[in-house]
Image 1 (cartoon, rainbow, N blue to C red):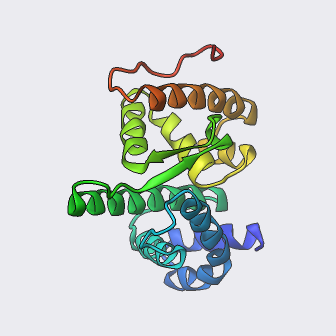
Image 2: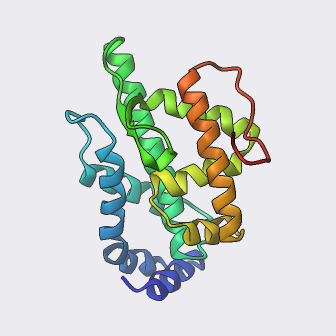
Length: 198
């Protein structure tokens, strides 16, 4: 995939070129599928949603958005990560509501969040991210971009419009906060500290 081609089509789409979205689809499909596969690797084996279905649902939601000022490939895949996260959380909540017990979607948290590998309820992770969002929404965007979207430090910095060194520092603190919050499992957590983690 040529990044410049994707960026050019995204900008054309932002300026009303309906045909740009059609031309964009084959250029971004493989990367969206890789992104979906990263998500699904963290899910339980018997998950009813397949990566291809996740890609198609995410793409439909992406092209259905209005007034998005697409600026770059990294921004597009950052938004795609956010959309996929929402789809999976909605799916997990629906399944849990239907079963009322034992129907939780589980994800594996390993090195991506600086935690030992463990199974975690996706709804529990979403609750932690909502709590973090109330304290610092940019930290949640960073988690979406890095953990869910698989973006590099440089790509994350581009989307967030900060330096890669800022992303490195903030990512370290955010992972530490999130790991502590998930281990504790309570709701009275404090926000990420501004200094290095203990």
